[in-house]
Length: 115
Image (tube, rainbow, N blue to C red):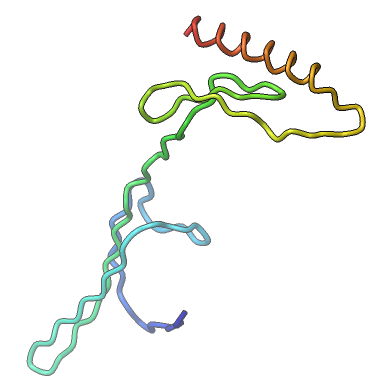
């Protein structure tokens, strides 16, 4: 990264919400440097145009979030079943795990049918 300090430069701003730039607030946008040379006289200024804040669309929203599984909606509109990390400890029982996943799958499908 190369750091420069521009001294005595006029900055014209185009902001969405604020009338003037606030101290300490970060702005997202484009800064353009303009240099006009007429008869060996330089007129230098910069313009800053704030870009629109685009709200990020959440991808794959969760329809159901259980202890063992979650059900999300994929980009094409179909539901997707996701298994959470399996924690196998000394008291782990495959039968109890399978029954718990089965119960959560029923609850998730009931939530899906209601929507």
